Image (cartoon, rainbow, N blue to C red; front, side):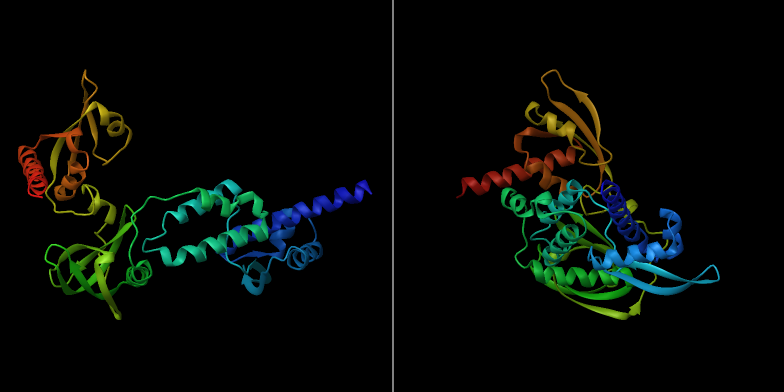
Length: 339
């Protein structure tokens, strides 16, 4: 009996290793019987038995098909349920938590489907529900994030824009501009997408303006894909390089050096978080405050970021930005004094 138990344990381990290996090879077309036999040092006949056991007893569906490889006809196996890499409960939990972060965003429409697929597949192939404790985690974690009023509608538009990116076809959009309060009709060539604080922005060439523009996805009221109206994605355009000097999502091309003085109360955070890749800690003062510089464009977005810190941040340079922030402070003061 001990010998049989050891043999059964050895085979059980091999079956799980075969499942993981087929999962790994599925994105690359699957794995042949010979490759499996060679890898696990058993006969082709034994591998066939193992594959039958995987489907009949482990309930892992496999796809079998014939193909020609190196001039030889061979049988190839792949995972029917799609590719899922080998994950520990800790890694699966991290993925689950990252999905929770997207609730209320443009991706919200797919979150529950992805969560259910992830959890059911892990439970089916590897773990028991206690290993992940999904419901307990969900009830003990609260996400403080902005949420779209109509995430499903925005999600549908988002998917349409992603298709435009992938297939390089033009898209007509009806875009709401906040400062004017008007909806304009544009035909755009989608170049890329930017995510900032759970909000998505489309970077596209506007045919009307003949220039690259940034459109906040949740401000797109409607869209229509011109699937047969293709465009050539410019080989000299690189999204990361285009946005490298932008403080946020706006690239107005006017790069300048901004020096800020953070109070002692905010110094630790200012030193611990990289707000921009150009960030340089220039000086640490005796009172605990710090001076940090940035070389950025899109200063209009930086102004709103500066406002949130109130009197804990002082603009030292450039002078015109210092004056602008004074004007912003005065306008805020007028609102409260007149109310």
